[in-house]
Image 1 (cartoon, rainbow, N blue to C red):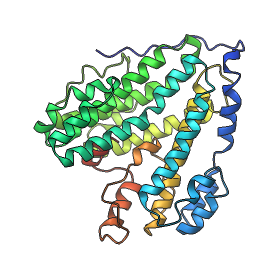
Image 2 (cartoon, helix red, strand yellow):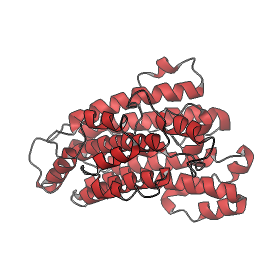
Image 3 (cartoon, rainbow, N blue to C red):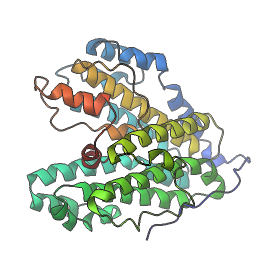
Image 4 (cartoon, rainbow, N blue to C red):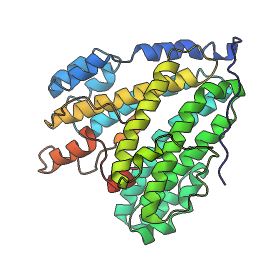
Length: 344
């Protein structure tokens, strides 16, 4: 049985000195956001020029090391390490409750790693997969409980969905432990994120006959645009839904990033904006690396960790690499198989 997401109360206007150390750190990270024009320029530059441009920004030293023998993996890891290191540093300055919430949020990086470990272990055989799943920490127990469904499904879809459910539960638990005033400005973000996660689970469940009884967080209503997805195939619904959700979260983050809230909300907002920026930076570099030319900078996807690329992207001279880059890096995910395998 999943915990119920608790609403907040009235946002506090009384100065809370527990947030005195966090506020300037959030302001600093917000100041590193690249302007849209700078991001657009990355998509018209060649790879070397794009790296040179980024080396003059906050990405600096994190990006410079990828120039020698660049690969998608190097690009992804460099940008990811930059983002996560900043998030970890800021979390250290947060008061206890906010720290627990932000740590639960950034666990999406761990969830992403777990999905890739599961996928790689699955390719190595069931015994390796079981060993990987059995070694997961207790916080990911739901994944261990579904190991037997993999043989029935023939792929890792059930485990990927279980990772998402476990992550959602951790986020809800940490959110609920915040005070009413701390939760209020965060509620719209968490509700949207979890509602979208639940809706994706419903689409994927149609393939695997999942039991979603433990994926209900007590929402009176789910996302307001459910009707806009009616009649669409699962892949079409996922693509359109991702675009709508990204717009909702983007507006929330832009409003909250500059707010003087005694809450984790400003930090959450800047984390989200930086992760979206990181996705665009990584996609620009990888598309330029393989000579794929997007017509415009993609802006509709939700978060950086959704852009794991195919493990087949290893050799630049592979005949099929351009197709995979176009499909997974430049374009939105368009197939249920992509979403299930990568946990998008």
